[in-house]
Image 1 (cartoon, rainbow, N blue to C red):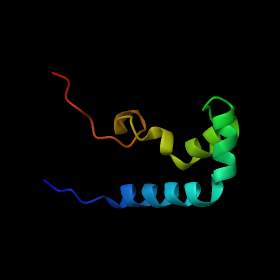
Image 2: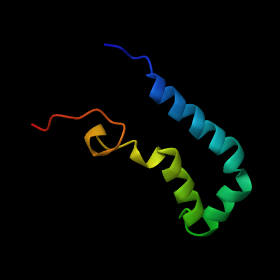
Image 3: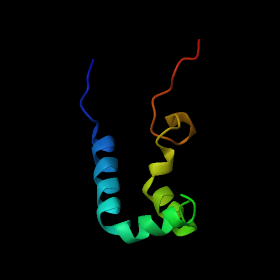
Length: 71
């Protein structure tokens, strides 16, 4: 079994780390917490633009996950 990240996974990880390190500073996280834990619309749009919201979905549907067999 290959446990290494693919190039696409590495890029996604780096992008998310950058966003969390610069575009989602503690001050902004605190604002979201005060709103009941909900992300503001602009931050959700930024995550969508980066492709983060596609992580849990199969690639067949435009996401990043490998198709799973449902038994």
